[in-house]
Image 1 (cartoon, chains in turn yellow, purple):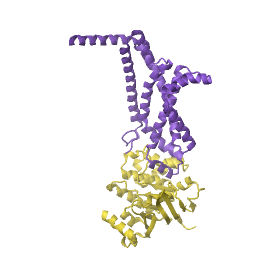
Image 2 (image 1 turned 180 degrees about the vertical axis):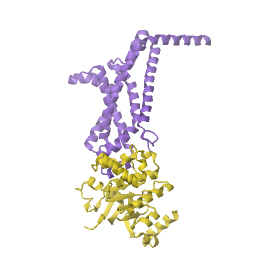
Image 3 (image 1 turned 120 degrees about the vertical axis):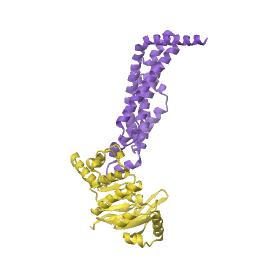
Length: 247
Length: 239
């Protein structure tokens, strides 16, 4: 075995006549941070969702740490137990305190006892700097804090891989920084991350590799330095031009 | 002349209050039965509604079909006819006989269950898709997601609709006069038939219903406050 955490081979997905993914292949090794960029509607979110089969792919194969996700015999729960997912809209459970948001999966899915689960929840909350909010409800937190709790929830399951789906797109500009800093710290600890984002600075400074997706295909794949300063594909050039003008 | 009219009206009010005052205990006994039937029917309907509402969105086609059949049948037929079937029809067909109060509770509970099922279903549908996605991404099964994440939120959202249903039941119990249940309206009929004071009696009866409904909506507001999710505006409301 290599130390590939994630392997995707020739992934296809369409909604009716609309082809969203047209043969995506990708490898992510242990400890790597891969940033995926691309215009909206290019299939980035669908790709992330296919990895844990929140969306069923039409064809292609996916392996996570050597286990084939796309095999119908694979227990999805076993896969999802080891993959964290951070959503654009946070998707915290609003009727539960922050700490219960984190312990729920630990006790009901991972089989930890309550005490152990709470201990671990407080540990990850401390990591994202929100230990003192453990007994607040999500609705009492700012958007940035909610997203950091969502990250803590993903971290708590001690995942082999964390997927981020535009984690800062729903945030007010002044709250984006705190979330990106949290993500950067996690990346530095050696977690394997796949991040869909439009944040150029994050990609430049944190990513090991940046991938450009458009119309359901990977068009370019490079280290951040080359990706931003010397892009090859014309569509990436125009995408970056639009993206950088915005800033 | 206007002076006369005013004093006539005044005299009438005094008469009505005096006359009705003596009948209050008799009417309140009826009101108690009304509340009893409405509350029991509501509880029965609540149990049926929660089960049927969840089956309706279970994703299992046979269960969805059963629930749909139940809801459509009940909602597609008049309550009065349902009462007649349960009270007069079923004893003849099966030999099982209910007393009028039991028949009333049973019919109104079964009936309300169909409406409450629709309330529960709309509550579940009202929870953003992301909640289910988040729960499933954490490794929960569909049923675990429902149990821990979706349903607790959905039930909070639908509290006002549930209360509305209880108020409707309080009022609708009045049609149980057709099978002779001695509830509030039936007792009004007695007093009116005996005194010929139809107008005064039925106005008073209406007034008692109004007070009961107002009390129910007051209690509802207290419950809503109690189960409110901190940080969210209304019970279960979204940011």
